[in-house]
Length: 109
Length: 115
Image: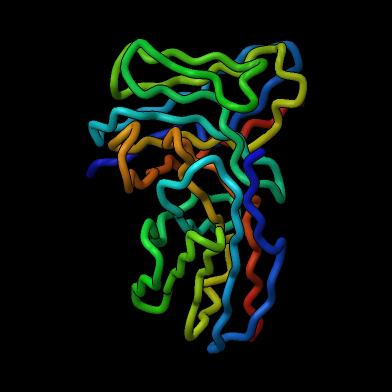
C-alpha cells in the first residue's frame, strides 16, 4: 500500500527553528509537496521538490532524498502565525496525490 | 482575480437529504478534485476529473456523486447513502492531469453538518 508518515504534533518556541519530517512509501514518485493549513481553512502551497536537495524560500526550506523516501520542512525564525498544520503529499506514478495526515505545529511565546 | 470558489461555506442537512456543494474555477485548469477532511486526518480523495465529461472515483466515493459538464464547474452531491457526511469538503484544481509540478489550488472549503 501507499503510505506517508508525519509526526502528529510538534511544539516549538517563537523565534526558534523547527524541522517537520515526512517519510513516504508510494508506487512511483513524481514530486513532493508541502502545504500549510490553518484551522478551518484551505491548504496553501509552500513548496515542491522533485530532485534531491534543499529548496529555500524565505524562512521556509524543504529537503528531499528520493533514495531514502524522506523529506523535511524547515521553518526558521518561527512566528506565532506559523501555528498551523503542515501537510506532506507525494505524486505517485499515476500523478495522483497521496496525502499524509499532517503535522500540527504549536508555537509558544 | 483567478481562483476557485466553493459554496456554501457552511451547510446543515437533515438525515436522508441530498445536498450539492458547488465548485467553480476560472483558472482554466483541466483537472479538478474533491477531498474530504475529518478532524486530525489528512485529505481523502472522493472524486476527480481530468477532462470535461469524464470523472473517476477516488478512495471514498461511496455515497457521493459528481458531474463535469463544463471545464469550470465540478459540483459534488452528498447523497443520503453517505452514512457519515459531517466533514470539511475541499475542492481543488490543477493545470495538468499529469506531468511534473502541477501545484494544487484549493477553494475555501465547505463545512457540512448533519443534524
